[in-house]
Structures are given as structure tokens and as C-alpha cells.
Length: 349
Ligand code: NAD
Ligand code: WQD
Image (cartoon, rainbow, N blue to C red; front, side, top):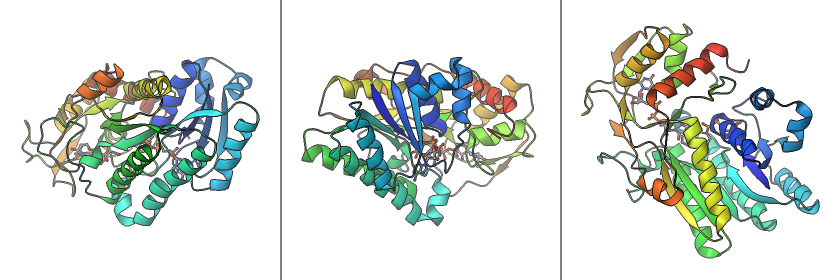
């Protein structure tokens, strides 16, 4: 079965693509490489123990922008006219930085919303009606709930979150308009970690914004110290609590969601992908130091604008709907991030 994976070279897309290949799916990966490297596919060969000839039979890589409607059409048309139509799409491609979205809202609306509209129009033309969409827990905005369920208010607080919520609405409208569409809208909490081989992982350009890549770069000596954004939150130790999810657990969640869409037509599910466990910034620092044996220098600083104290999923609906739950612990998330970082101190370069 042939699947289209947009953004399949990125952090979450690459881990999911690898698992999809292992499950026997053949892939068309469509990525602009705006925030990823083509080198990731060489790493697939190493992990799978195969050569380039085998891999090119299983994956076709297309460099393109999801806003390029002509190219998307060419791709769908090529597979449909060769009798090997694309059955479903996993749509990871998009821009994902909250802070950048505040400065460049036009780019975020253009890529995240108009890019998705483009993709949907081409899918409809080629009668491909199943899509797994990368949404985010950011759509919930600030919350006072100890664990967030899917029926929580949608109230995003920044342009990035607005675009994710808008795409959710768009897909819901499509589902209501025509009984051919099926969607799995997956709201990720905090994806971290890397494949246990250390061959693929998160490779942010420039100084990272997120906690895990930042700590890894402090531990390896590329950055001097971590700033902890506030110790006056109403949490157990005063630092921010998040629901970190190992990227391999997350990738497995996508396989379960895809299988659900393939089982039956005309469904829409909106699901939290998280562990249901909260860890504070100090918990992460402590576990990271224990795993690596390296001291993580840190300093308490002011709260970061737009942050919330606690953000933890109630993942029970995902378990009930998909039979999926996370398996990997914070220790494994730190271990695998560190393994990736030490094997690739400069990422894919
Ligand atoms: P990533 O930046 O590593 O991957 C996104 C991929 O999309 C990259 O390979 C990038 O080159 C590609 N891309 C960007 N713009 C494109 C365009 N116009 N056309 C084609 N390709 C384009 O990000 P990720 O962490 O793997 O995130 C994947 C998806 O999950 C994104 O939609 C993101 O918003 C969402 N998400 C991520 C997180 C997170 O913390 N990482 C959390 C919630 C949701
Ligand atoms: C985690 C905790 C920080 C960095 C972001 C996006 C969200 C989603 C996931 C895409 C918080 C603290 C961080 C640092 C720190 N992405 N921290 N020092 O903000 O929960 O979520 O990524 O959809 O939309 O907002 O993740 O890793 O940035 O922060 O103290 O240098 O670590 O305050 O408590 P966040 P994060």
C-alpha cells in the first residue's frame, strides 16, 4: 500500500516513516527540506540494514513545497495513472515554532493552513480521502485542568496555535460536508527522544527553543547553561510541568491511527497523544544528569512569555479508540536523546 508522507524528513515524520517502512508500507515522502536534511534517508539504510537500491524501491523522495499545487498534482497523477494510487496521507509538513509564528504570521497561515487546503484539494481530485493530521496540544491554550481531555476548550494563544485550530475546523467541516472523508487529528503533547540506534533524531537549526534539545546541547558543551523559565509556578517544585512523549511512542500512535482510518470509511477522531504523566523542568534536569553522568549547569530565570505552569494529557480516549498507549519512560527519553546527541554532535552535518 502506498502512502504519502508530507514532512517525512522532519523530526516526527522521519521516525514515523521508518516505522511505516518496517510495517511494510511503501512511501512517497514529500518535503521542502526547509527544516530537515536529506541525509536522514542514508540513516534509514543503516537502521534497516539495506542498500540504496532496496530503499529507493520502498520510498520515493520528492523535494517540494506543499503550497506547490502543480507538483502535488503531478505526484498524485503519476501514482494514480500507474495503477498504484496513494491510499492515505500522513501530513506532518508545516512550520512549528511558537515564537517565530508571532513574528511571521503570514508564513504560518500560508504554509499551515493554505498548504493543507492545497493538499486536500488535490487529494479530493484523486479520490484519496484519508488523512492523519499533526495537530498540537497548543490548541488548548492555557488550562487549569490537571489533565486535559479532548473536550477541553480550544483556545490557542499564538499564531502557530491558531493555524492548528483552524486546520482542525477545516477538516471537521470537510468531514461534515461529504461522507467520503476520514480524519485522524492527533494532538501531540511534548515529543522528545530519538530512535534507539542514535541514527535519527531532532536536529533543530540554530539555538533550540525547546527544553530537550537545549539540555542536550548544554550537556555536550555547545551551550553554557540552561535557563529555567520560572520556579514560581503553582507546581510541585515551582517549575513548569509537561507531558513528554518519546517520539517512537508517538510514531506508533500514528500507525494505530492510520490502521483505524484504513479499517472503515467516514470517521473523524481527535485524540491526545501524550503519556498522562507530568514531569517538571527540574525532574528532567535530574534525570538527564543521571543518564549522562554529566552535570547540567542551570540558572533560574523569569517566566517565558506565553508559558503555562502545567500541560498534561488525559490519554484515555486514545487508549480506548486506538488501543494505543505510551510505553517509554522519562529515563528512556533522556537516554535516547543523549545517544543521538553524542553520536551526532552537529546533527546530520
Ligand atoms: P519538523 O520541522 O522537524 O518537520 C516538519 C517537516 O516539514 C520538515 O521536514 C520541513 O522541512 C517540512 N516542511 C516545512 N514546511 C514545508 C512546506 N511548505 N512544504 C513541504 N514541507 C515543509 O517538525 P516536527 O517536530 O517533526 O513536527 C511535525 C508536525 O508536527 C508539524 O506539523 C508540527 O507543527 C507538529 N507538531 C510538532 C510538535 C513538536 O513539538 N515537535 C508538537 C505538536 C505538533
Ligand atoms: C518545556 C518546559 C518551559 C526551555 C512547545 C510548544 C508546543 C509544542 C511543543 C508544537 C516549559 C521549560 C524550556 C528552556 C525552560 N510544539 N523550558 N528552559 O513550551 O511546553 O511546548 O513544544 O506544537 O506548541 O509551545 O515546550 O520544550 O519549550 O518547554 O525552562 O530553555 O521547559 O518553560 O516549562 P512547550 P518546551
